[in-house]
Image 1 (tube, one colour):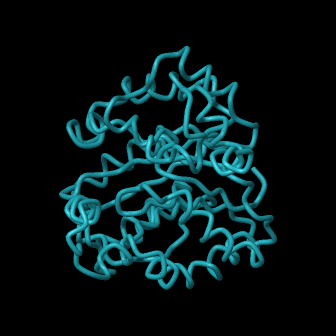
Image 2 (tube, rainbow, N blue to C red; image 1 turned 60 degrees about the horizontal axis):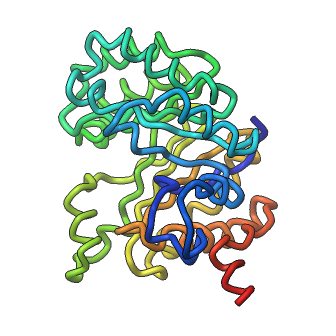
Length: 286
């Protein structure tokens, strides 16, 4: 993978994006192709809830994206939250096997751990990382408060990730929690679901993952994103390929926010502007 920024959203299927990222009418069959024409990665959060899709579905995805596109699927909650990484070897291997048609298009697969998964359970994470295939990047998102105190627990975690070349996910919720919900349904939901943890910027592997959780106010998002511009550019200069996933409170305007953040980054990382969205291009024809 060349050293570059991989930019994406939490999913590619969202009806709220009709008329902007996607054409206003028609089916959903072409959505992944339209998405991959603009963005170079996707989180693929649906696997967290429903597990691996059918083989024919995965094969169809492989045909719709270019070779440099990266899927960053999340391990199912059954493995991370219900079984808490215990006795999951066969299920984990089966999950990876389901994505064999995408083997060359997998970015960091995400291991999101429960909020109460603390330092005493790190040996289970170590066992998973020891089993992890060398040709598939791994990213781990911790949410227990003890991993954010810069003490023994966080030191042990970071050393474990570095020793296995695994990337620590940086969940940036500062924009989301910068104000109260303002009565906005999306803000209320997002503030209730996302953990309010401090941001610790650290690269423990070659594919740092930043999940930027935005506010409904675009200017607030830009304020908190400014420091990321220099950091992302530095990583790329160092030969590291960061992944930036852009969320907004209800994700209705995530594509537009991603474009705005990318525009702010473009000069620093030597990138061209994002192509026109399919819905915007179609609107110009009428």
